Image (cartoon, rainbow, N blue to C red; front, side, top):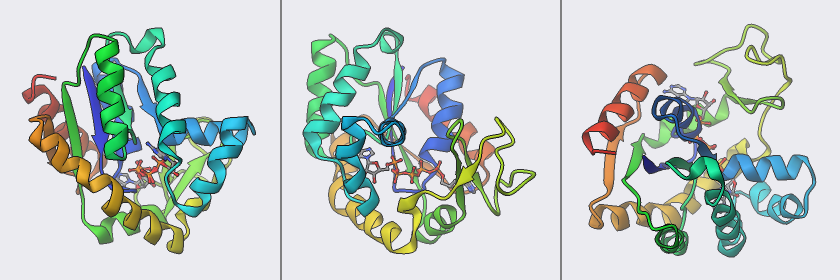
Length: 217
Ligand code: AP5
């Protein structure tokens, strides 16, 4: 299955991508995670991306597209993948089509996680992320036993710099301006599958898997 997850910041893309990718046995490719790993390692890419990420802006298309092109050429993506957080602009969507054409393949489906604005703000304001394994927790909805320690790997939990209320507001505006038009783009292409992304994590995972299977992905 070759699929894309789309939805506003905090919709639960990372949370759901993990379960969906395991179910279909495909790699989860999150551009946000790749950028954050590069920021931590202080690579050239990380240094270039950091200022955009901290401001809640998108990293320039050409940088992001080159990174995804390289990642999709890796062996583990040959039989399928789940893209989380890419594409995010029409230019990126066009580039993805070109990358897949060069690999003689196409997308099977684009899954939209639809969730209201207030829920997104609630989810992001309480998110805590693990320095060790990258797993996301929530101070109210998905609490670890110790508020500062990851139950999965024992790593230290932190609040992402871009989860401050002001930056979240800006990220939501960037989503509305630059990424939301993609939904119509993929709807026209007959690839869009929309699910209600409110409710428990488990309920949403079931809906997502059922919707992708029904779409023949
Ligand atoms: P990225 O990391 O992709 O951020 P995002 O799209 O803003 O999405 P988030 O990671 O904030 O949220 P999510 O939808 O994954 O939600 P999560 O599962 O964590 O990108 C970060 C930055 O990198 C961008 O701003 C940009 O600068 C750059 N970037 C990345 N991709 C790019 C691209 N293609 N082009 C250019 N720049 C790019 O869930 C959120 C919280 O809610 C968690 O605490 C979780 O535990 C909780 N939660 C999840 N589901 C539920 C539920 N059902 N009920 C209650 N709580 C829940």
